[in-house]
Image (cartoon, rainbow, N blue to C red; front, side):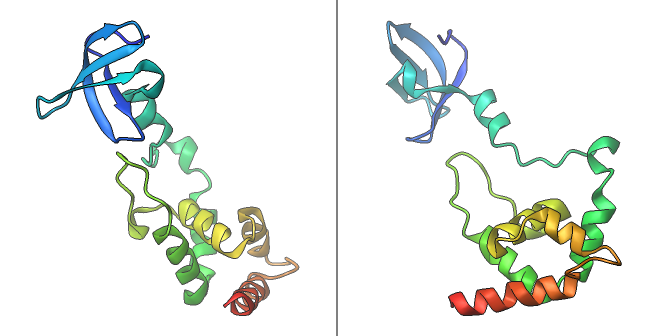
Length: 154
């Protein structure tokens, strides 16, 4: 249960506020504009938990960055048309109320590859494997097959 002072969110209504009172299952919130609203406790989540779940921050510690050069290398070899497929997929992601979406340029190479993977229905691992010198299929062949599949859907 929530306690007075907790910052909570009703995701469906995109309402955030500080708990000022609880009465059974009803939680009373004060929003930043001073307006008080109430919701059933079951309809609320702690704001810290919500933000953690939807965190788009890219970690900068060395452990999280150890494979970045591999992702960057794949991104450098992608055809502009394949990258555009990923950009279009990223642009059409349904926004989550209360979460500021990141621009394409703000994404890491891995996040971009995830979007490209979603758009092309080719797993990130396949993109990574195709970038090896002896890979079958090669990264070029994989891109051509992705573009051919996309043209059939259009």
